[in-house]
Length: 107
Image 1 (tube, one colour):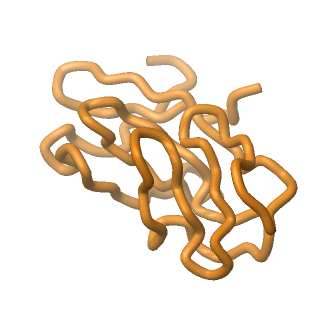
Image 2 (cartoon, one colour; image 1 turned 135 degrees about the horizontal axis):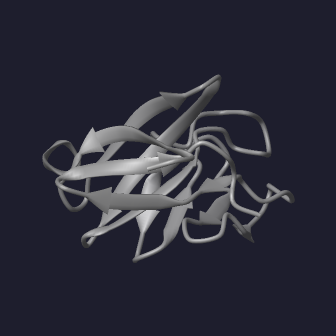
């Protein structure tokens, strides 16, 4: 898959779980929410803290464990302050039991 890198096997990220991977110089947290894989940069845009330790709310929100900023896993948009800037998201693909993450951020 051109433009994608293997991030984890689907067995490594069962529903409700997450894993942190490095793509180039960027740390990305890969979530499995009910069989759908989401990948966001593991960095809160409010204070640069890790989002990988945050609580997933419902189907699509991640809450920063430091100050409670919330982001939509689908598009990175801010859903609750104090963050004002969206978090970068990355496209995911699943093929033959592997989850792949795009090397470049979604636009």
